[in-house]
Image (cartoon, rainbow, N blue to C red; front, side, top):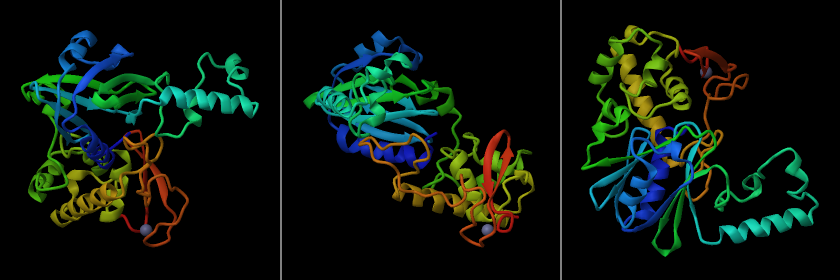
Length: 312
Ligand SMILES: [Zn+2]
């Protein structure tokens, strides 16, 4: 799932291309991803609106339009936002011919798959209009298209009027932003003191801090030298401060490197992220700090990676 650095990377990429652009039309292929409003009304509300701002709040992406409507997007597990140009169909045809030429004909594979996943072989920056996982296509002026692609279909697109973000439950309850001035050690210590759960789970609670998920929770607690299984209520004040410093440093470094590509993450231009996790997904490898073997433990049903020597 994209976390704060990945969503920030997406938002910066969208901002660069969408500011001042007008939405010509919206094509909803999978109505289930549109929440709280019918797809027809969504299409009508967005047509002709101009993008005035692109912002991030936690893991939410907010497109502010000049008609006082905001589009709120959450990518959940596998959602992606990708730009495409007008030549996708041509790219698809070229790929099909190339597959035929190499003998790996899509026709041969028709037996096991009703739909051909040609996108797998295409460069990631040229997603296909005919890709079955493209749920919504936003058409902008000058032929620019923005695709909402989501394999598992858990992502969400909502409309909010007059900046009333509180109408979205997840946004209403969202805690402070960890990068920047939003989160103080005082506030984090208070939130930790109120909860009995493992500190790793509490860090991932969006009501406590916005934007941290399973990957960065492991990374942050390794950087802070804190055992992720410890109850958050038992942490000393200096330990809370270490966690806050590690949170900011880890997330800022990941933003600078354009996020982590663990499975599906792509920036809107199709690029993969350059952040390499230090412990996440590295069970059995040497801890980058002390060379002790990294262990995988399960906390609240989620895989967690830690160094048993550095993290106490
Ligand atoms: Zn270590």
